[in-house]
Length: 212
Image 1 (cartoon, rainbow, N blue to C red):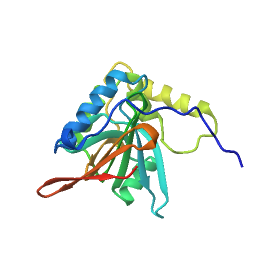
Image 2 (image 1 turned 45 degrees about the vertical axis):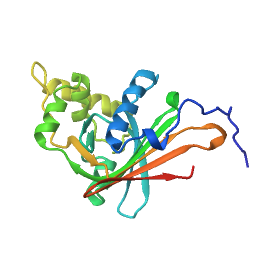
Image 3 (image 1 turned 135 degrees about the vertical axis):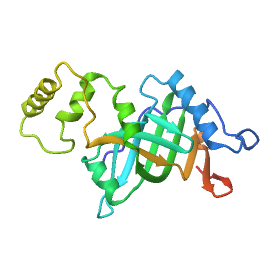
Image 4 (image 1 turned 135 degrees about the horizontal axis):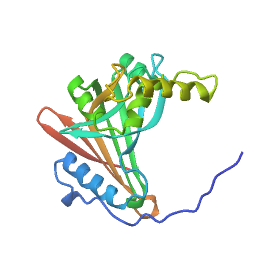
């Protein structure tokens, strides 16, 4: 057995004091996200999206948060991908954001539903043309014999839409994850981290502090 002992960091950049967290976790998330955009060298919008399949086996992958509306966060993908099939079978998911430069993590959970076609169309129109074409070319999650198959499909898509706007494929679009619970993690010294979990109820949000 091998134990991995990476260089240990001291977590001392912030804290979550009870008197300063407020009652609106969405406002806290927005503030943390804006700080992450300013401080992270990587993609601050990256999140690990976790789903389960028909057998209840977990699956995870990194996607990008591309929209937020009230208590919903939005992402886009191929509806026929593995995650798309899993969300059809079990329309619930969890998402985890990790911002190491700020020594912070945010976890959210809740039900997932497809966005309207109008919203998916609107976002698709903002994508770079190459990304639009790849949505047509890639049968996401399906096996390829050789890389050339994908390159050939990309060339077919480019020819199909030569000289005109690329339409959104019917199998591609957005999802909303409605936040029912959200947990904020702030690193602290000696691994005595701060954890606050908010849960949404009909009358608003409740909050509990959790042991690290």
